[in-house]
Image (tube, rainbow, N blue to C red; front, side, top):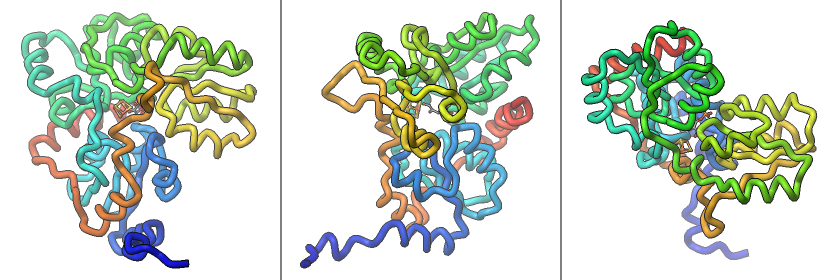
Length: 316
Ligand code: 13P
Ligand code: SF4
């Protein structure tokens, strides 16, 4: 068989990534929303909390973070002296974008009565202006630890905030932010899928809107959804979150069926996170080869954002 020029020039990414991993003394961390091939080559796959914990605990001198920018930034804040690489620097997050640091700081300045619990999906500058960080895995536990007389500002995800108010009974001031992916699920189409698969349980991420969460048999962070499908006795699930997670679901429970919930618009892949999917095996290889792009943060930003992150780790 004759190979064309591109095939000849293209390295074997998987073996090259493994070679570079040794050369750089690197660990590859990946979020559950990454492509299947990235998940398969990662040393560790997790949700935001697990990945932050792994980043803190690693003895590797380089962290290659296959996720979005705020996740890699968190790894850098926890490891200021290590090289932290991300395959694509443009891998942002619509939730983080919905909370610009200047308006958040301004709000904090004008409303000093609030204690701010800020979802980890935000920039380092917003973290530095926050009191405590949380993830969807530990948010409820953290909210429950705040004395009842303390007013809470929850930012930036209003959907997660509203869900937390419901489960804890705690009133909170909510920032008006949302995730474009979790807001793109269609209630009408979800009900149609449920109608066609009545035995399937609906499982959803708390970033979804209230009207979608109302139908969920179980609500949880990505890692909690994985634990649920492992321990639950059902054979089939309608999964209302980014479909990248289904790769791990199939590995954990190969005999079960996982149906991705449909987005509002049939003509797009809007339930796929466009930022998470910017990372590819080729970009992963290139970033390890060139040691770039790397996450760089000022000492001031690292010192400021470390405190609320450490508060989160000690409270969860
Ligand atoms: P998890 O912490 O549940 O993995 O959520 C991260 C995220 O960005 C969901 O959109
Ligand atoms: Fe951000 Fe939403 Fe993508 Fe998660 S799925 S990284 S919240 S844009």
